[in-house]
Length: 235
Image (cartoon, rainbow, N blue to C red; front, side, top):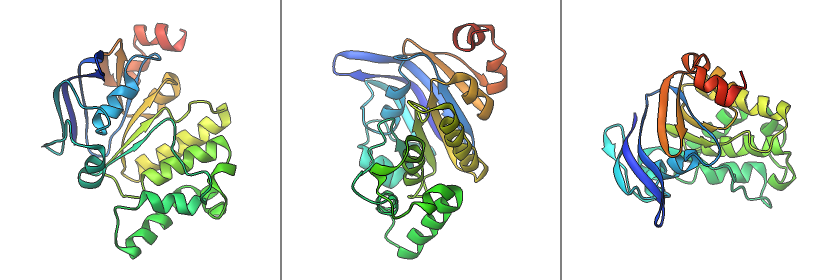
């Protein structure tokens, strides 16, 4: 599905990524983990079209998307990007925010199907569908951002730091929501600093440090890697 080959990327003259390569196959739940400032979020932004790569190739189902504007990546290539800043409309209701996520869907019946799908996954949002997004708890806001991201029925969901700033119990709820999506067949690439929990719920993982992929493999294998244990798990 997604193939990233030897991409360099950054901001202006500041290069952040150096020859990053990774793949996500259909139906997989894949993690990209590493320390703060390693280039995790930059990788997602480059895939989503918010940053134009300096070099390398990005493709979705064999079609090149490197350098394609973000609106076309979302509309034409079936990728949905959920940033760590969430970008919710606080003065709009939960349901209004969700419907904005389905702006690419013109069929009203399909919009209703998408709403029913996310309400079935996130019962808490269904209970609060008329509530203003700005009045939700931190965990509920994360859930709303994820739910809005899947309203367009994406082929690939890019999720950036969903546990950032959340209490442990709310982090658990958000990760359980992502597992439900995986079980529904949604393909997910997850960026996270919570390495222990992330590698326990994902299928495969990549470790990025200083803008380069230094390790990859099955998540269970990475959990048993001595470098991962020492650097991220405190073992």
